[in-house]
Length: 234
Ligand SMILES: Nc1ncnc2c1ncn2[C@@H]1O[C@H](COP(=O)(O)OP(=O)(O)OP(=O)(O)O)[C@@H](O)[C@H]1O
Ligand SMILES: [Mg+2]
Image (cartoon, rainbow, N blue to C red; front, side):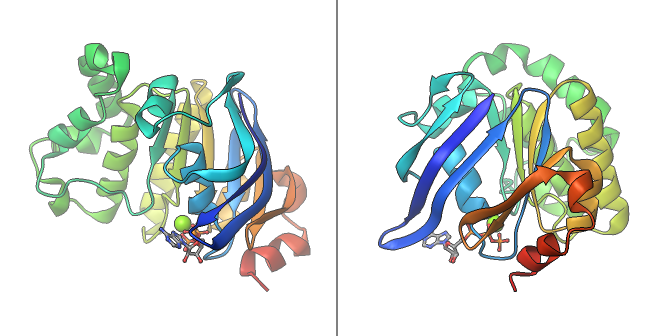
């Protein structure tokens, strides 16, 4: 479904990603692990076309997406839940969700998508008139995921959704992701939470200082000391 081949990217003269290749099959749930500053957000922002890359290619459903604008990537079916959620705090839950339904054909399906999100996270339904900024951290993460689902994506990318959440909310988020995956959604999950991620994804990539150093089935990685080393950035 998605294939990155030899991506080099960075900011100005600063090179962050070097020769990154990665493949996601339709229906996969894939993890991307790495320490702080490994380049995880840079990598997913390349896929979303927020960060342009210098060398390499990226194809989605067989089509080259290297010249698309970020909104065109969303219209093709890739939706990202950004690091730090990036909600509009003064706007209500409902308004934040509506903002997720602008790309392409999503607007016509707004009511159905909204209902779908409220079924997935009933808590959001109870709070739909509340300002997003007054939600708890866990509720805000639910809203960020809900907003990304409003465009009706085929591939959902989440950048550290469990960051700063209590174990109970981490569980809520992972349970929702498992349900989405069962329904056929393809998921790329960026995480630093090593154990939870390896328990919940099928395959995993480990990024260390801008390079993919390990990849494979998560069940084979659980006891691999090299994974822990790369993850700790040692
Ligand atoms: N807009 C930017 N301009 C310049 N440098 C940047 C920019 N964004 C990120 N960087 C640098 O790129 C490197 C990788 O950052 P990135 O955010 O991709 O890492 P990360 O793996 O997502 O880290 P974290 O786990 O802390 O979110 C860091 O050294 C960071 O300072
Ligand atoms: Mg990051």
